Image 1 (cartoon, rainbow, N blue to C red):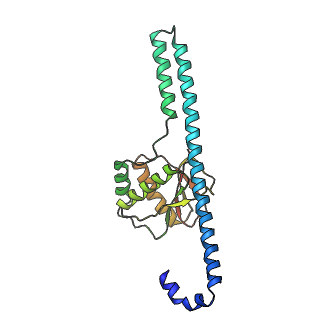
Image 2 (cartoon, rainbow, N blue to C red; image 1 turned 30 degrees about the vertical axis):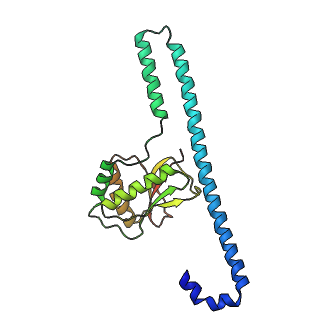
Image 3 (cartoon, helix red, strand yellow; image 1 turned 60 degrees about the horizontal axis):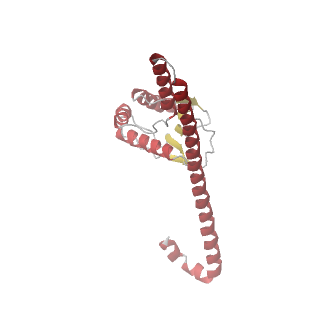
Length: 213
């Protein structure tokens, strides 16, 4: 930036007010974009918190209801009802959105020794979802253990129609199939759940991390 100002100083000095106005407009535009991005992130987090609080309140109500119903039940009936309630509570808890060290090492081992063509794999995650960002960088770290260099890319405002979970998408070219097959094998070996998707419009293989909740 300093070099650019120095090289163009004669032009700037000849029209300082025009330069100041343009600089001010650009600064204002950048500020508006950053403010909107922060606002969307905060709104997304608030929505997640409110949704989880509502679900936990519902579960608390169900627990209280179960306690009332357990009065007069036989020990066996009580045990069965409690087991069912515990299962439902576990299902309600947010699933872990990260890879263990063992999973990272496993993925790294299974992609190692296979060259990754430049820019043929992208990791796409939702910018408004912190857990998606964590998961994306876990995959970056796992792939780097096998010699693959991939920078996660964020979808700021969820322009893609998202499905919860992990999706491996590819076109039908031989190059796409090779990379997708290697990565799919690595994910399966590491016990990572994912879906596969075909999209002929893609110019690369994409690992979509679609998690709003």
